[in-house]
Length: 464
Image 1 (cartoon, rainbow, N blue to C red):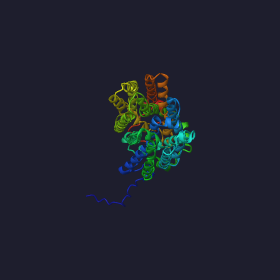
Image 2 (cartoon, one colour):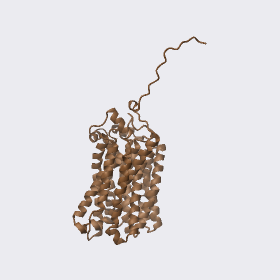
Image 3 (tube, rainbow, N blue to C red):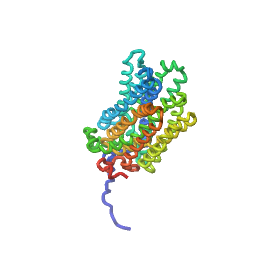
Image 4 (tube, one colour):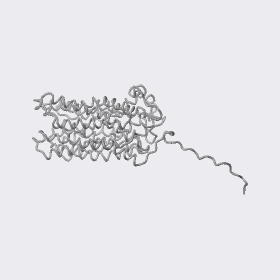
């Protein structure tokens, strides 16, 4: 046996704290709470936002924009629907600046409050018959406030999920706030269908349409309670600890990430245009073909529910095969399906109406709709991620989302009811997004916050 005599015991190795190491330890419960807060808040915001879209296709025309020509009245109503999309980029700039400078959580409380109050006020707004020109003006102002709120909400809700996720589940986590669009639309349709069933046509046009707007007050209270219990995201905490917050995020974004913003804008075109073709234009179009309003609402509702599950599945699949490949596959699918969708509607069959909506809205749209958020979040560095993601997303929505139902209605009028021009419009949107996303860098499975972030200056050369 050795006569070796041990000296003084060596001190145990020092494990750096999360702040020192730049990492944040998260347990499953914390991640789930953040995911839940993202999903609930997103659903409430979209419920409020889409409720206006549904009512603009059903009731707002004659009540707030009366005209001797029903088509003119409808187009004026849809124009106010589109107006909020023009405003959304401004809301994105305002609130993303706050989100990148002050934090995601505080911003989300403000945006949810603004959206909820605007929606409730719509429910008590007098019509044109009661106060004349003031009615459409006030309705338009409230719609603008909705646009400002959603412009800031989307980026924060997305980052709440993505920045809390594990790297191998980021596609699934990022899909969850995106499902808020489907769930919000479904809740809105359920509320409208319930009011339509309870009240006669005269009662619905008189006061029944107000009930879904007033219900937003309950959703607002629930949403605020949930969001106030969530902590700030790990990515923002690391930005604060490292002292790397951008002084003016918008300036920084345009200076160093302008190509990425352009890619994000192009990616959004197909997602937003087809969503509002399916969810808003289809409603008024199918009714004009002779379908009952409740039948079309039910078809869209069922498709939204199916789409919810499809989005979660697509998010999980993208974690395995990549965001870019999956997204591009979706753009090809909608390019092929655009004209057949309208052909199916024009057959006058309720069964084919359901088939058309289920394929387009329930199965194809989720392929890219589930991934747009994660794709954009992975393309920007954490110091300007809120600003960059929101800017690209909201500019794309302003260009192609809000105007989509209006463009489709105008094409339908200009070509005497022919649907092929509308299909060609959708195909053009799909082609634009395919080209844009082909320049994106694949980030699935990689760490979200690293020095190897995709940089706009090398976006094209690094594209895979």
